[in-house]
Image 1 (cartoon, helix red, strand yellow):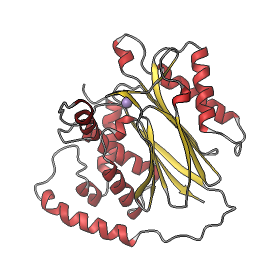
Image 2 (cartoon, rainbow, N blue to C red; image 1 turned 180 degrees about the vertical axis):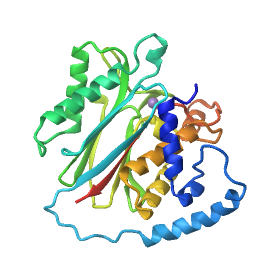
Image 3 (cartoon, rainbow, N blue to C red; image 1 turned 90 degrees about the vertical axis):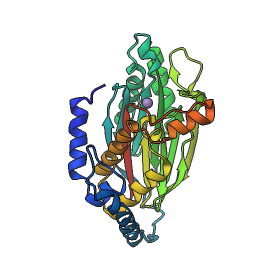
Image 4 (spheres, rainbow, N blue to C red; image 1 turned 30 degrees about the vertical axis):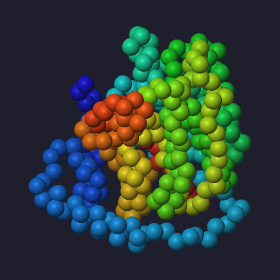
Length: 309
Ligand SMILES: [Mn+2]
């Protein structure tokens, strides 16, 4: 499939505005790299490692009574356009859903369920006064039940997170997920739920998986933490180690949430089309014994949330 014009436009923008060190270190390029780049790469890695050390945030004095919030932004690079997401900045709620592609082959609109549950959750959050207690599990359950009541076709994985006071709470079904990073290292991460390889737990009007299958939890956050949320188009193509590098470099180069999300999404897009090993190919080998090359061409949703006071 040819790159859709709107995706190409975003990729060009990312390529044009990515700082040179970041581009070289992470091999972010959508054409060919100059011959000198391979030699420069190691130097750039050292340079960035040094930068990252310099900018390593000190433990800030934290005032317990001041609630935290997230400065969040998303980048969406579509392939089938079956992912859906929302961000409510006032209530610090983020949601990502991913329509299950198998429905497409049956002639069903595979984006129907993902869009409906995100639409329902977004509407409920928007109708609440900011500061209202919004439990991600309850939100997901009500969004799901309303989608079922409306006889919505297709199926979807989903993740919803909310930051309340100092606690990030989550609920997810399937392999839409998240990672929490502190000082550039992942300290919490969702674990993809799968029925079998490449078949995630999924919500639908008449399927086997239910909202009660959702993984739920919470973690206490600190100022400076970074929350990454995404569909499997992100997590199946980008290893955790690369996510950590991006977040470290994002902090060192003081990238905005939107720009960091864009750079990571652009990287995932490229990985999906490379022949290099990916989390997807590793998972395939481990679960089925079959060796496949490269990543997974898929819709890519990336949301970056900077935790601030
Ligand atoms: Mn997907």
